[in-house]
Image 1 (cartoon, rainbow, N blue to C red):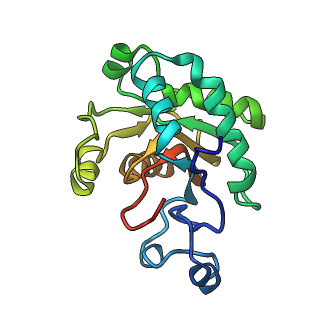
Image 2 (image 1 turned 45 degrees about the horizontal axis):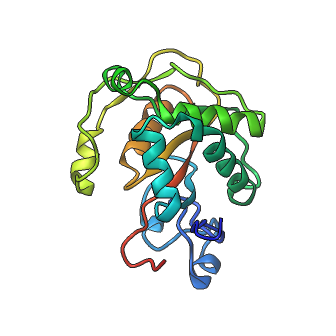
Length: 213
């Protein structure tokens, strides 16, 4: 575990990145300089670790090499991280995995985010709701796209097809966050369907430029 670059508080309560001591003391709720200028569309974004080293390798195997056997290990890591990362006054009513488009799921054979959700849900005693949030747009892979292209790629990519999320606090689960565009699009769809608040939680996130390892 020593090689895993876990993310620890204090964190920006919007984007989930580590704060400097000055930023942590500068506002309530604590936010980084960038997020102080942005509207709040979700409760926030959290990630267990940065997308480096053994975590990056494990996610690649899990996602692209049909290593579904890694789900208990990776979901267990997320459960361990939740204890230190979760906002003390916020607990989810349900978890929702970021869905794949049906064509992508047929090709891969499984949704890695759903597997993580069920493992995490077992650890936390939280139900998982699948099928309420659906991906209606067969987007191109996000790998290799810049921030603007990623946002355009997933614009209106998600819909909620029933009312199961209405009135609930939702923990949105995915494997990796790069720019947050996919998570934001999914979050907006759930908020529009009546979810009261959404917190996104991923196994890993890209390290922003300028943030040293």
